[in-house]
Image 1 (cartoon, rainbow, N blue to C red):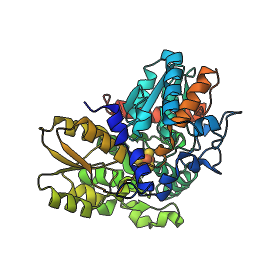
Image 2 (spheres, helix red, strand yellow):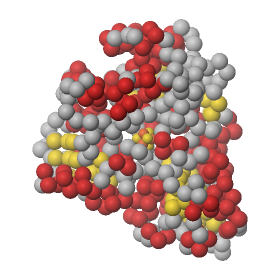
Image 3 (spheres, rainbow, N blue to C red):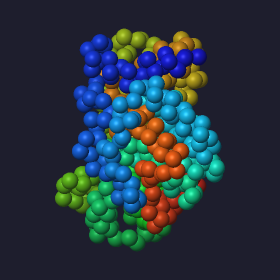
Image 4 (cartoon, helix red, strand yellow):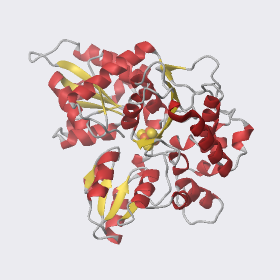
Length: 437
Ligand code: SF4
């Protein structure tokens, strides 16, 4: 078993600090990561990237950038002591959720670690928890708020922790697209009862988009059930509008036999998405021009280099990676798929993994019987999730001890109702779904 201190020593934050101090070889994907957590928030308006259209900032909530000096100036040991003391004081009244991609400096305090949907469902199973502190990104906290009770406060320690992919599909752009599709196809079903278009949103999207799907006969999917959800949609619709991640949509539909020629890419920055009426008429899946900046970095040349250096390597990538990367890998699957594949492998296996670096490093520490490394040699964490620093966690927990709820994520009730419909359709499409990105 790897000691926590060893793991923190090997953590992404520690590595970035080492690189920025000139003490370690290597590079990071974004030089500003080395500027430290507080620099992110300078000049940042209330909700940062990932802030969605479907929730409201409760009156009196602080805007980010005002983290008290006590937390900014504290040592790691002080923050650790304060977090531990606050958690001990709050007991079961608080639950701390840590996403798989979260840094170890934060995950060490998590009561639950998992993907976004696992964590939201876990929160729902904790009726005693008055506060759910969600150490992930904004859309994840929204989902947790939708699935938990009104008397449970979901807290995002840093409001600027968003998701760049979720930002790529906003409700206004999707509604404009929908209006154009309705003008072209109408809304009447064909002779087999299938409507012209079914909207499908990835879990990594704002609550407003989930509500849009709920209100327009659509559904939510995760990276592990995307094929099941597309089958559900094809039974009810002639084609699918899939947002925001083009890669998950393309990789999944291609594996189901949908030709690339029937998957046009809708670019919301262009008139009519940059697509002709014929291309839309011939489509089976209209892909939204969105992507994950972390998973987009993986390349076929990285896979070739891994195979050259390690002839027995097994390459597993996340389906948010581009199609050529998924095609060149040995397997592609959700976070949970990757974890299970590694857990089931015989000792001495070698894995090159194409997903977020914090998860890869944690897997390498948890499975020392294997050699596990990230396909990308550049240190590239999810930079928005990286905004959750232990200082923010200490702050929100100590505020709770003082009887104050800060950074609460509240999804408007109408939006939450629509989003819940789309989420429930997903659960009904495959009742045992437990996995997300
Ligand atoms: S890893 Fe990509 S999809 Fe996941 S939260 Fe970060 S930016 Fe969003």
